[in-house]
Length: 464
Image (cartoon, rainbow, N blue to C red; front, side, top):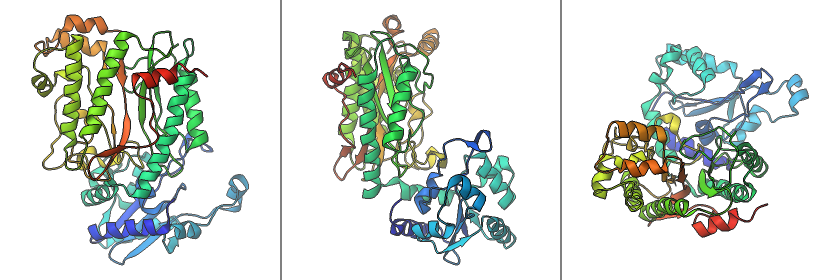
């Protein structure tokens, strides 16, 4: 948690954008796994953390813009709860840490909201993603659960997104802490992974490091020999000599700021010639994109530049052909690169995604594409200093997608399907770094994580 002045200033900036009414913030609650007292790992709502910083379940807050009043709602622990959980700060003590002077029991939230509704006062909230909070909105404001997010405030979304988009120095420092823990996770995984192991052994190993060095994983890790499945959370495969594996994993710092790093490496510590060739295409796309990043540069154009590097490389491999720019404009490269170049990073590993990507990743001048692959670009707008985002190009050979496109003779002027089918069992390669946009370019965050062929092989061959 930052100094109280940080949260006071954040709320003050928000009140300049939201001119009247009440702003409602719901913290998250404990969620049972299989019975009430056996809960999932608690994770506070990121918007609540951003404006109040309080990392405890069953809290809510209101900013009354009209009366310039801020209230934190919550219940102090009873003696029965203290017996099981130990002594805890009071709600008033919690609130003081973020500069809020007024506290009330959670039961009074409904009274205040009900009265505001009767008075015709505007109550603004962000889109909800937890079902219990959706039901809370129903109880407080009388909105049908199915329509709750239809009533989310666009003005509040835009104001909060504008604030959270540009990271302060203290936020960047926290993200960098998370990247430095990811360095330990990724280099240790390269050394730990051996032929004959199961994916789950490595996935469990890196989760242990995330818990011991930080606040646990930022998302369920992707550790798999089946790189062609982009979000693969199955860990049951036995690793073989000659396999490539992808390790897409990140960690939360204690502050909840996140990292998201991907490395692809050979299980036995040595790339084959073909693996090396394709890996270096992806590496070139990654480094080209990083070199292109600077203020005012549209991130969509950087995505397309990375796609051109990938297309040129695949032409050299013989699986693509024709004019590179024409192929990328048509979207032919998306057979091999079917996702976006990157996404925002911050308190969320996909920062602010619950606000709706089109509300912060696109604008009036930058419209979302409907083209396969390009439509999955999460952030496309011009860059500004202080924005933190990922750079994660990849090349994948997805048999089911290859079969579909080949049967449709799709982009046959750009794709050599006979050659592509020789790589059906290759799987894929993805390389991902976290960067911050600076005044004249960008900076890769954290301790450099091995990513050249020589660097990866040196670490992956040094087995634990």
